[in-house]
Image 1 (cartoon, rainbow, N blue to C red):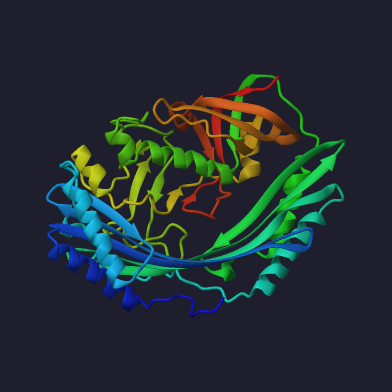
Image 2: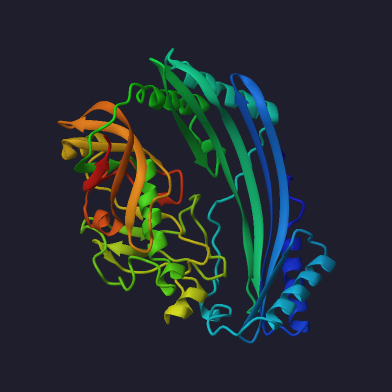
Length: 446
């Protein structure tokens, strides 16, 4: 992929955005906003040393939201011609005219919009040919299979590249945007022993290809993780401490975000209703939102409404300091937007003193979970039940792999039952957290 991959310049996208806003005003909208974007991607996968798929995508589109007083209409188009954009505006207006008034509908307060937009170093195109991508994927798969002779098959390895750019504009005068990139290498392999098979995977992801782990190291980790799962056993049902390995501990933080996000709160469909200022985690848990980290996978100078993103403590010493609110959800709750239209940005969970080995020793006897199956988290009640696999631990040492078990608890109790957070921080996404040790959960097996 070459560096001249976008079809539109930044100035062209800004001009189209302004055209949308101006046309909406001429057609009777009292307020309007639009986001116009395009993205380019390339993905190459190999399996058993042969190229399996080559995918190339190039997408573009525009979303238009208009307001007639408190009535809202939205339309979208993948055609960025002036005629198509004007037609989308008119369709959105037609929808608005037939929509009931909503007191919470409308744009953010003008003083909340981002005034200065810093360059957060989010755009690093990767000039990698299909042939070069295939060679890296083959090297990744080969390194995985070379770990052990019991690794007999592969689900494939892949190398992906993606870049995008957008402009967001509204009738309050805001018009800005930026380009971003995200690239990755991944592999999954299958091991077999005594007629039983296991699989595991690994990946690396970054905005800048120079920050990716090598294809060979990704393969070696995937191979090692698969081999150590062979000869898994079942457990008898019990209650015991549980460690969530860092890469799945991010899911617990995701459950927390869902529970304290505006949509769940104003619909009263969260187990953490009215929890602002309350103890929701163990006192050692602090979660900070840092949207302005240069190169961060969850970094953004402003949210999807143009509201400036700011550093803040979300949880301090276990006490909830703030929700995740858009303008709409904030108005529904009688509050102010937190700059989280579109989601959270770079949630950093402060680690404790131990790495994963230290957490295992702290736990003594219990379960290390390395994979979760299914979607068993009820955001209304907090009830949590997931299929799981991992390792049984005694005297702080891994004894054997376990499989075909279910772990269960309640998220409210689990959050308050956190007794350790590891320094083995997962950095491949927007939620950065180490392994999490919870004092007790039910483990269902035989």
